[in-house]
Image 1 (spheres, rainbow, N blue to C red):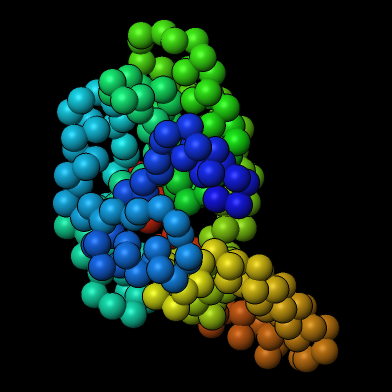
Image 2: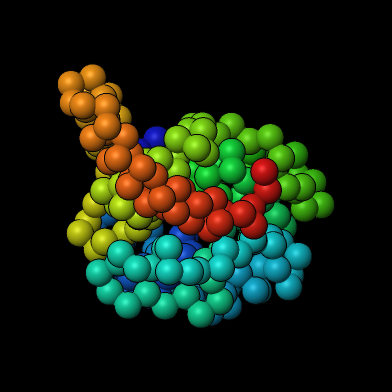
Length: 238
């Protein structure tokens, strides 16, 4: 956390842990590659997530894993119970819930891939709960300050096609190279712009019949790819 919130939490006697549905080996590798200073725990069988739900603290949504999310990774991905959606939970020493939030996947946040509460907002809410000294658990935060909006879903689908060289959509999955996969997003936007520009230039400079045939041949490929994206995210709320 570059905002200094992590240091403030530790100065107050707290600690931060990240829990992921990835295997522990991948969680540890991401911690090392990204230079994180807090523990990352792999929970592929959702044992931690199940405990949170059983105790009534936080009930995370789960995304079923299909070929769309696994076919382009450089290792064998194992998600026996799917991928749980993001959530945040802050507990006091007596197990009182100081703050909780869970991502509800919609097409507005591209299936839960973006839009997280800012660290400053979460820490502010935790401090408020501590100052109040109330005994009850905090309710779910329904109106957090988010770290940024999501692109329109149609645009997101086109960017995924660009990531797969317009032959099929490709998810932004972590490749074990130390880089955050979302850092490739701006490059894919530029690839999409160039792709559209080439089609426009082709229709302007080449015979219309040639370009019409080329477009007719490509349309089934593009439509199939975009349909795959929408089918993958069809279970999320509109």
